[in-house]
Length: 251
Length: 120
Image (tube, rainbow over all chains, first blue to last red; front, side, top):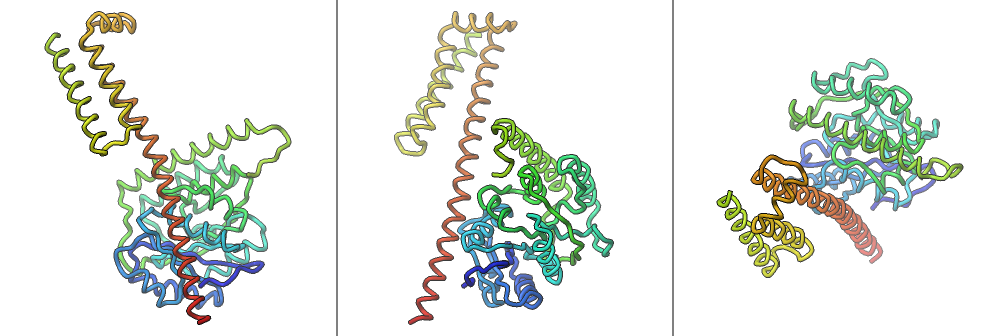
């Protein structure tokens, strides 16, 4: 059972789908590097033994009744964290690619900067992380697209290694992009005048399995996310235009 | 031309019968059958009332009547698909929210039972 939240309380959430081979290592590593911090694995209706394996490793499990996809899975964790009163949530992927040794750095940045989101980035500092050619191209493309929208450069817009504070948690628990959430989430935050920072992080090679993202899926991803970005820009801009003057930009 | 209109009439009647049978067997909810019935009835009327179809053709300035019928049928289908895409999107959002709520409630229930066990 996750303990009651206190000021500065942190919850680590781990979305997982069929990760029985990697999940125990991820949970144990998180518990080792941030002792005392509860770990919540959100199981997206895995067909394997992800749930018992995660519980045996020391995590709490939020088991979804059917497969929702990454966005729905992460949002379920945000909703629970918000209801339990947590101040900060850091998301770590269940495939073992995110290094839990970076969690304290993200947490410190969240607390010290006061910004709503901190992204663990492969590219802020040269750290030897490598990505495939198509993905690398996609990242460069979205850097260019997002630069004018966000008003500042984002080095690693597709990183899922992110921490959010309670203000962002409130927004994401109500509205969160469903299919490929990372980039759209940035736009959602920026349109609410929320801020983000990046901290250098290491991405490890997958410990098990293979990435489901093929070259064709990458192209679909680019088109899908681009649509999502522009829909969010238009949606929030029209709201801003409708809002009476002097009523602020939050909400 | 008459053959095309007869085929359209036949298809419209088949569609109306299929929708009514499906509603009776509760395979389609009544609110989602209305669009199909209106579309099929409109195609039935147009295929049987040649002057109306000619009037529509002149109104939208098309060269011939079969093309008018084809475009009207295609247009109706596109509108129906769009309407059902909107309905499916709403249903998907509701479904995701419900699944998340079920998972969270199950989590609370499990926590509550564990606490009870510990206290017992």
